[in-house]
Image 1 (cartoon, rainbow, N blue to C red):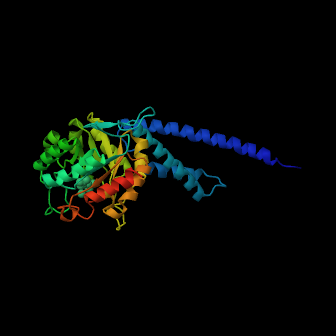
Image 2 (cartoon, rainbow, N blue to C red):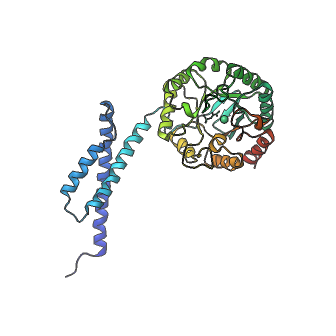
Image 3 (tube, helix red, strand yellow):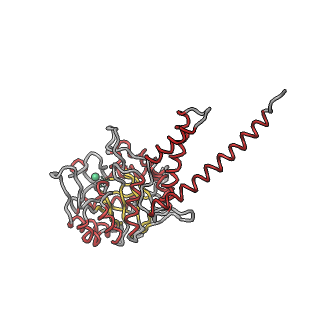
Length: 352
Ligand code: PEP
Ligand code: MN
């Protein structure tokens, strides 16, 4: 007596595969319904108790030959897939989510556009004087850069370090930017600064320490100017996108997302630039993405390759710190480039 042929067995396997596929899809459709019910009733999406219960039930009814261990592995995968699916569904409904028809968002200030060709945002860590800012802005303009950065309010790790010149620094930035037809990007640390900064800045920067300052994000959402939002140094991309949502929810969709490095165990760099954040943020949102290679690395000797990596990954621009005499800078003096270094950086990253 001959048993079924290999082809017949394979045909049965194919049909079981089809059934499994249909069941998995059917399950995902139900999972979406569960998500909607949970959201309406403010339940958490992830329920470890429910997962444990489902696994117990399955283990009890399992007649083999699937071993308990393999059953656990397979269903853990199915549960993770469901959770991912629920979370993706949630993200799809955010304002900052890139819809299938969405074009890249382009943000134009002072005639300079962010979101199309690669841009350079450069300037001192902190504004220290008119002469210092003027020198950087003049060189930036010569290089064809459009965005002048500079801190007026400095978030320093030590309360005894230089905290920035405050409003006089904003005045300097505006004066110099107007002279060289550049756009001003400057950080606001505190909701109390927003009004003053709005008078001088073209783009508000939210620093890494403030990505979770939801009150500040809300206010900037109402301030009617573009916001360059930096990723928190401990933030997941999910949290980063939700921080952007705080701004968008208030009606401001002029957002530039900035990867500036995250904290890892690595000590050879100041932070670790998460290059994969660039294509992921671009897939997930329509906003321009830039990478701050100064704070991201903390060292000048690898800024060129890191900037190239950022642009190759799809970034719309890079941010760097530059100072006429970095050795004398009042903050971040090791990572600021001098003006010739800035010109060389520009040549290597943008002209080769
Ligand atoms: C800055 O760009 O001036 C700054 C303080 O950066 P971060 O918030 O990324 O540390
Ligand atoms: Mn700095």
